[in-house]
Amino acid sequence: MKPANSRVVDLVDTTLRDGEQAAGVVFSLEEKITIAATLDQAGLRYIEAGIPAMGAEEREALRSILSLPLKAELIAWNRAKREDIEASIACGFSFLHISVPSSNLHISNKLNKTPEIVLKELEEALQMARSFGCDVSVGAEDASRADPEYFLQIAEAAAKWGARHIRFADTVGCLEPLSVFRAIRYLVSRCPLPIEFHGHNDFGMATANTLAAVQAGALMASTTIRGLGERAGNANFQQVYHALERFGYYTSSIDNEIIANLNKLVKKAAYRPPFGKMEYIH
Figure (tube, rainbow, N blue to C red):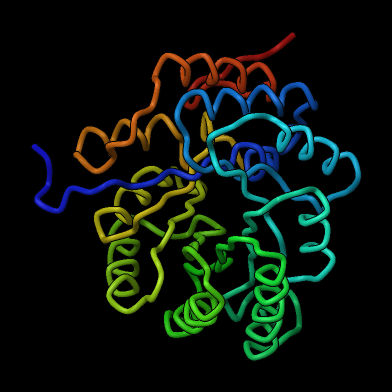
């Protein structure tokens, strides 16, 4: 039975960005091109393609991906730094994701900054990106441990400069479904932008947390193929997609056969065993 508030939820695939941050995973240029093309062929609308500021080799790969005749929107991940924005523009990106720390743990302890400085840096980065005619989205890093009111300040700044949406990142995977539901429901009622939920799987709850976020009103969700990602990984695309489809939230057309083939491709490229099984590659 579909819920009364059934709606479309867009999935943002970040296999090529967060997925490649898994320990020991480095996709080749050919693998990156194939993964991007296959994601597009399967029907994904948004592909977070990588981080141009990582260096010349990454930028070469991203230019190759950008040269493909894809329907999906390709997104470059950036810090709120001039050099990051310049690297993304030089690659040819027209959609930039700009991420800033949102918890005091990250702002003060990790970066030795203040919330006011972070907001100022964000506004400068957004102004720069928009001056080049780019679409933007904003990421609130470690939002799960942040003051909700500060998250809303970030959202207000993002909306001021025309951001499309804001990402709520459970960066260290410390939430559980009930706390996700409460947090997102509160923020949705006050946030000027659509919210994307970005979950990590440290306690094995990334998929459940993503579903809870959607039920609370999030309109977008980050996923990776096979749940690949930093530390314990991210929300698994197939799990999230099929669960949302089962409960009537996700209606965009995805080719399951192509995704199944992509799952095998990423497994081979990343040398990662299926969740819950132990396999050894000799």
